Length: 368
Image (tube, rainbow, N blue to C red):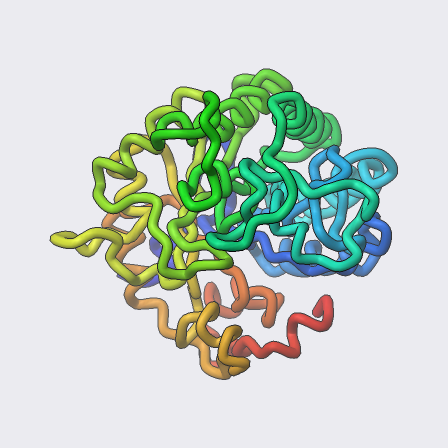
């Protein structure tokens, strides 16, 4: 079955009507001085919308909390930035794509930065641990946790009010929500720590707060992963049963779509099946899913970045086409390939795969 019969069909997912199944995956850029997106940031998103992307998920944006992010040029999603985001949302939607901000709190990751925003304030994490064997600071108090949950809700409400088509909650890659989920970074003994279901409490409370702050029909996406920035071999779920126990409470809390982040989308997640993480999530969770992980690249982007290599070649999409056609996932997140080539979607749709631009580290230095 040709790619055009699946990847580029219009689709409605969780009430979100999209012109095709392609999604710009969130990628941190750090081009917003003082947290305010510039005209160049707006143009960066609009170029991809004009080239046919179905939905734009923004880079991670700081929720309304003073220690949410670790760099002053990461955009914020509150205060003076909101009128700018309103305009960006309108431009992206006018170009035919849905607009979805990714709400972000880095938690203990901020402790690794020498001069983060609000440098006089301590970083916040579940247990004062960012990575195993590297303690810092004090565990978050329940009051601090409540304040952060309220901050997520305020930014979710702001997304609704500026005309966004939904939100994504970043619960992956070892940032704050994932720090609560992962046992090596959560040593709490209160209701936010202990067995996996208790470690999941913070995530479900964030989702419920965002749902209360918006509407029943406002799509909430939730990104999760097995791997962490500090441990690419980490696994939250050893079995499908573990994954199911994670998904059910989040569905009950209000997640509409799961963004399933893998290093390589083509990798099977559990033995005995060729389903990837998104495929298993769709099967077990009963909700629409997005696959992501080196889509359109000839090799694993994470490994290439760690080794300082470029990925000059673009990959064939045969495997992606097969998995999508058989219904393993609903949406396809494209990250580095789309960062390097704003016209990626248009070129693939028009059969111009020989004209695709491969990813290079130099692409991270500009807003092409």
